[in-house]
Every structure is written in C-alpha cells, then in structure tokens.
Length: 316
Ligand code: MN
Image 1 (cartoon, rainbow, N blue to C red):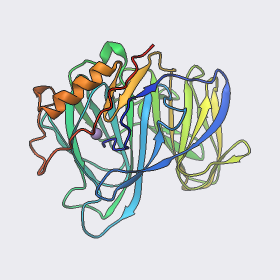
Image 2: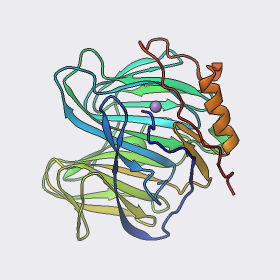
Image 3: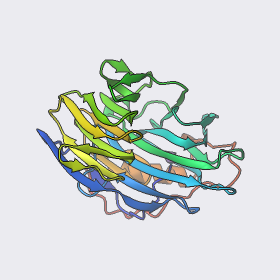
Image 4: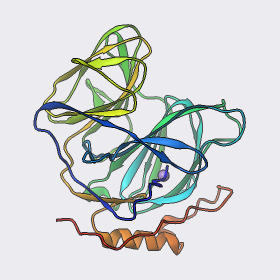
C-alpha cells in the first residue's frame, strides 16, 4: 500500500508509551488510496504515532464487487520499514522489484522488508472471489537493520493460540509462548484474535510491551467500554493479560512491542531519520535510481512521488 495522504511534510514519530495500563481511543480516519479504494487509517493518528515499532495501519473493506479492480496500487518505493499484509477476505497480488510475484489469501502473511530500498505493487488479481477485506501494517526498522538488503517472504501457515472462547493467529512475534516464523527486527507482536463463542477471552501479554487493539468486526468489550469498530485503543504498558468480553464472530487485531527507542521521520512511503535521507530517497525514485529497481511484472505506470516541502526539522 502507498501512503497517499496529502502531507507535504515529514511526520516525526517517537515513542510516547504510557508507563502503566491505560486506555485511549483513536478513531481511524478515511484516506483515499486512489481508484476508489478508501481505507481507514488507524496509525499514525494525531498524537499516537507508534505502538512499539508499529508506525502505520490501514484497514480496507469489507468490499463486495462483481467487476473491476478495487485494489490497484501501482509500483511505489519504500525504505526503512517492513510491510505486513493481512487479509480477512479476498485476494491481493503482490509484485516487487526483487521479482517476487505472490498471491495472498486470508490467514496468510506477506512480509516485505524494504531495508535500503524496494518497490512493489499490490492489486486485485484477474481471478478473484469478488470480496476484499484486509489490513496493511508497517513496522519501523531499528537503526541496526534499516539499511539491510530488501527481502520478501510469504507465510502460508501461521501458529494459533487457544484462548478458551476463541483463538489468536500469531502473525508477528510471540504470544503465550507461541512464535510466528516471520522474521522481524524488533521485539514485537501482531495477532488476529477471533471469538468462537460468546464469553470471555483471556490474552497473556508481555508486561514491558505497550499494546493496542483494533476491533475489526463483531462485538467486544474491555472493562466497561464497548469497543467501537475502526478505533485504535491504545492500552499502555504494564499489562500481563487482557480480558475481553466477546460475542461469537468478533475479530480484533492486537498489536504490541517494546516502546521504540528511536525517533523516526515518516514521509510518503519512507521511514527514515533525517530530512536529507527522505529528500535523497524521493530523488532516487523520481530519477529511476537502481536502488528501487523496477516492478517489471506490473502492467502500467508507477506512482510518482508527491511534492516534498523542504521545511523538515532534523530529529533532536
Ligand atoms: Mn507499499
């Protein structure tokens, strides 16, 4: 996915971890990705810019369609992050400058490591199930790994943790001692929680992490709060478990991680540290530099970079 919000300046993002359990609601806002695909952006959102290393979260669908191509994000570049694509319904075809061409379906993970530079496209394939519902997350890469070589991995199967009245698919990191095979570069967690029956779901958490939950569908409650869909609930740190009241069919995403110890700058599809790096990455993309390669398998033009206002403040 590409960040097409008209933001001409880079956004500084640094950890703002509550030192205790807390709960703050951040309603998502709509963003048009082009071609009519409207997503709800849950991160960054106002003052909440990071949850652990998670720095970006878009939720798209559910959509039903007969014809057309609801997702068609033309080739665009990334640096300094990993993209996590997760579907609940439908299909998305990923193509990248490494030559990868991978269909993703519900329950599978596409994990792309941009490192020093990659480009990719994401589109509804010609043969599809006429549905689309999913999420895309970005993980900021820490300093020691952000210039790593680009990579792409597809995980067809992921481990599941039994949670009594429900279960969690461990997409990223570790939950309850069950570990995802996906390679990440920070101590972090991403899981899809699903309620099988009405009742209570008890989720073990890492005390040192900050956590957030994003309800996707159905009914769930935490303490005295009924959780609203498409609202990111930031939960602070210091929790050893989360006890959710759920009705059968509820689905939520759970994110967590150690508070990220670096201040990052986000602009368009880049996660960097300095304004100069962002300007250089933009220039490299616009000039067709080898750093970002070519998505040869995509039929169509690539996305041009938006204008960059050079009023960026370097990190403190
Ligand atoms: Mn992308």
